[in-house]
Image 1 (cartoon, rainbow, N blue to C red):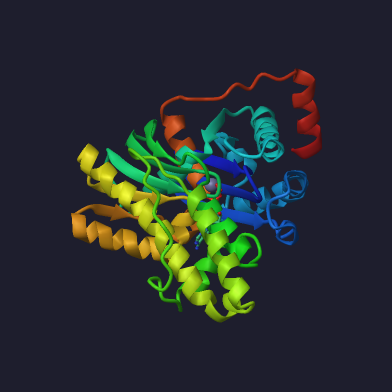
Image 2 (cartoon, rainbow, N blue to C red):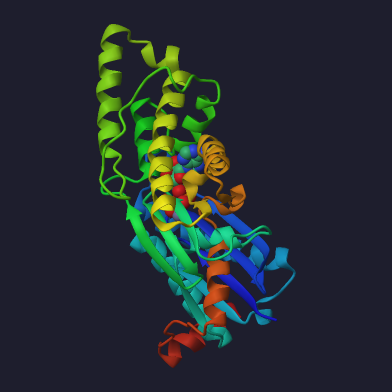
Amino acid sequence: MITLLSIESSCDDTAAAVCRDGVILSNLIASQQVHEQYGGVVPELASRAHMQNIVPVVDKALKEAGITLHDLDAIAFTQAPGLIGSLLVGAEFAKSLALALNKPLIAVNHMQAHVLANIIEESRPSFPFLCLTVSGGHTQIVLCSSPGDMKVIGETIDDAAGEAFDKSAKLLGLPYPGGPLIDKYAKDGDPKRFNFPEPQIPGLNFSFSGLKTSILYFIQREKAKNPDFISENLADICASIQSRIVSILLHKLEKATRETGIINVCIAGGVSANSGLRKAFTESGKQYNWNTFIPSMQYCTDNAGMIAIAAYHKYLAGDFADLSVSPSARSEFITRFL
Ligand code: KG4
Ligand code: ZN
């Protein structure tokens, strides 16, 4: 039996999960509200909040899983990519705990973990599969041949899909993060009302910066004619923006399935929580005879469950991180925390 604790702290969520033999026993998140007033994540505030949240979140994850620290076989953490200060809090905490408990440490790549969120639950894709990973910082099409073998075959050349949602929302005067709000308002809107252009980017790469600019000019133009344009048309604007972002994503995913011949297809990352994308992706699956997979909501946005599943496969492969540290640091941690 292999029991792991995982920690995720790459951006503004402090998360911890416990996993036993690949089954998630607990998956906890402490989200940070402090950034809302600034219209984006403030790195320094995020690091400080992680320091406050990490011990209570880990405690809760252990309790909910019904285990103690001494039941753990390894400690995992998000190594990269992410905000350096935020990553450091999780990495140092995990490393200290691993040293104090004398257990192996496992370093996980955040983007690979998003992909593997698709193999957490029942009805998982068989390998190889394609994954459209869409988050606040990344937009990628990944060819996943095994838990440890992933290749990025397409990615954004400028903004990520999550950024496209959040920046569009900002232009509409909506608070950060605007992606979920665009999703909410789009539900009552007409996606065909306004037509935003689809960029012509070669290959499997994406671009979203042109869309942002066209939305900016469109809003400026319409507001000059009618100052209340946004409030009077919010649902239709959101539905039209969302529909364009989704079509950009799915056209490239369709191209990737044609070029690779792979029909096991997944989505992952924060933007995979978007209801328009989930629906359109499922419809594309029916149209092109794909086997489609979407993680449940708790495993789409940043979470430690996905770090745990990635770590479980690294544990099986014997892929452990360096734990070198002075013996005095180890004894200090033991006296303080254990
Ligand atoms: O994967 P994630 O939680 O964090 C990163 O690794 O970046 O993704 C966060 C992104 C944000 O841009 C957020 O606005 C977007 O995911 N997002 C959504 C939705 N939920 C989260 N975008 C559109 N619709 C949603 N329902
Ligand atoms: Zn993420």
